[in-house]
Length: 123
Image (cartoon, rainbow, N blue to C red; front, side, top):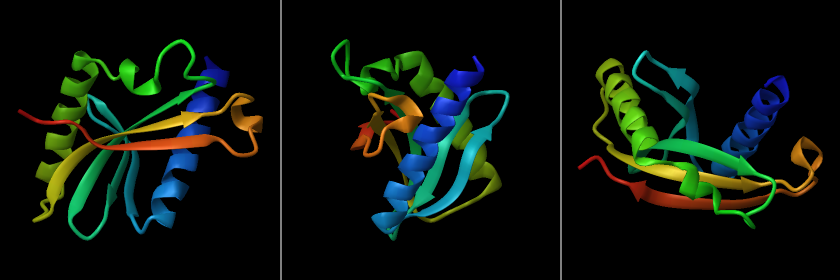
């Protein structure tokens, strides 16, 4: 479990750095409520992005985004609602998924990064 947690933190930190390079500002990492958890909350000029980060060693079995189930989406939406109540913003919320593929885990020199904007909606 500890290794999984450390690997998850590695993926989240890698994603945060990639988003910073794209001009995003990281507002929160590992935001938790009793309703759910959000890996990263970031903003650019137009959006507040609630980001679910999925790290896998390989996409051979399934793409990482496929592990963001409907139940997981509902928990992210609930946590985002809570965060927005605490941090009002005029920016449009968006729900993104970041895929990080690291064949050697945290020892991977250059993980592959895929970012899916608007991966799911709040309807």
